[in-house]
Image 1 (cartoon, rainbow, N blue to C red):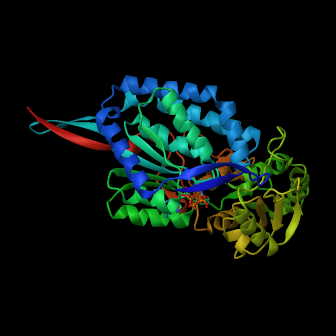
Image 2: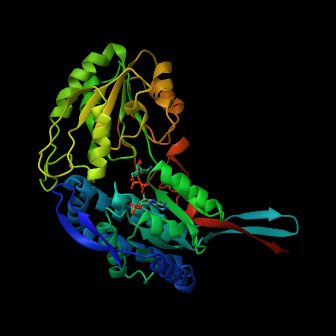
Length: 452
Ligand code: NDP
């Protein structure tokens, strides 16, 4: 029997021990999920599936405070973030609860008869979740998958299993049949790998690092298994001189330091038009030093610690070789703390400019014109997110069309909404989650010809 001791990253104190599943236990869970698929969930009347998902949403709603409190302790998230994250699971379930009754097919007239199409569920879907947003990323996978009639096995990250375990219990409390949503805490190299190789798992939904995503994609090829990948990012916040510089500078910290920068959508590059560069930096400094970096149990905290000692070492490694222009504060103490840090550079080959730091570090670089801004923003293997600040809406749209990235915002840092598709270009991923079409991605389209 192996287990993992969950650590509170703000204090380094042990929270609880969690049993880590073996390959044999994973196999048993997958087989039970398959039996629940063929034995009921697949064939449930769409209206009944919708009712159960809505009931699951209301049970989550009744436990938002409890789930948030668990995430504050397990992941060091601020109260504000953790409440939003639990509420996002509820909202996602409500949004996709409308889908079971809207999985329409088509009729296609063909010579000699008619062809009708059906959207059939795939079977067991394996969802593999990272530690940075344990609740929302779980919900973006399981809500549309369940709505489409699949059953789900879900592996939380070893570091952050607690909210997923609780969500699995709440699903049962809401009346979902046993084994329709099964949470299996365990190691990626054991449980995650087994999802990829188990023939009864028909699709993998993976969110995590690009390196592991490539390995999963290669593994899925063996069985031509469906796969969605949401991977890393190195996104730009492009500020033109005609923008509202006060607004752009005041909001920039929240686009990169949210969740202590452990966010695939972090706008960790800021590109500022040269004529506004000094003004922007002078306004960015008080916005960064004024951030409330506090123990996350303090309701007013705006940024908490990093997730682990290992992540702390990685982020410090980047800072040691960079030119830090200014930084915010930390409460100190035993947790995994790094202050929000601003680095300036004019070297597009610098490691801090090219690599995903996944910590509270942003690199700022000047540019001269629109073409240079686009070229610098696109000079990366990633393409997940990005923001553009300008008063010229035509330019905002033009630059948004030119930046090779899946999720962009103009005069805003909004990146993820469950109503709209989410996913990356290039090595940031494959496929889209969320939005109105997500349920279809958990089905096969079947054509049936009926002769006259
Ligand atoms: P990892 O890729 O290491 O892990 C992600 C998940 O995959 C974890 O549950 C992990 O399990 C599991 N895993 C690890 N190895 C394997 C394997 N061989 N087979 C199957 N599953 C495996 O990423 P991190 O957890 O370190 O998360 C940080 C990374 O995720 C960042 O690079 C970030 O950019 C990216 N990310 C992307 C998002 C997006 O939407 N595009 C969102 C969030 C994060 P275990 O933890 O138990 O090892």
